[in-house]
Image 1 (cartoon, rainbow, N blue to C red):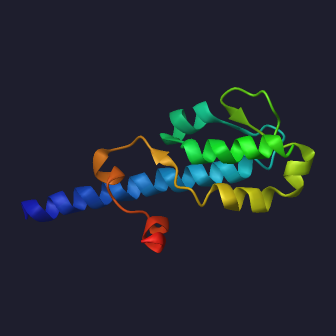
Image 2: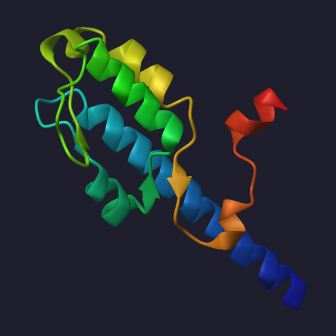
Amino acid sequence: AAHHAEYEKEFQQELEHLDAVSLAEERIMMALRTSEGISFNELADRYHVSFVEAHHQHIQQWIAHEWAVPGLVNHVKFTDTGLDRADALLLDLLTIPLKSHRLDVAESLPRESDKINA
């Protein structure tokens, strides 16, 4: 029974991890479609996730193409041109897994997107 309880606990932690990541992804998609954009601090504080280097490279590309506003610190928002192509840009960005700052047990679990490339 103890083993079962431990499994239940791990499963619950996995769900919480995935929920936080999913909620963060939803928030990013919603926020970047507004004039406000998204704050990296909000992602860290509210969802315990952060962008990785690959996300930041995408954002730098957006700025280079004038799809995102330059000069923002810990924040990204689209220009009008970026908003026009938000769907494609967000799809591209969110194929990269967010880094979770949650429990170690959840950190080691493969994400669905990782399995596709294996």
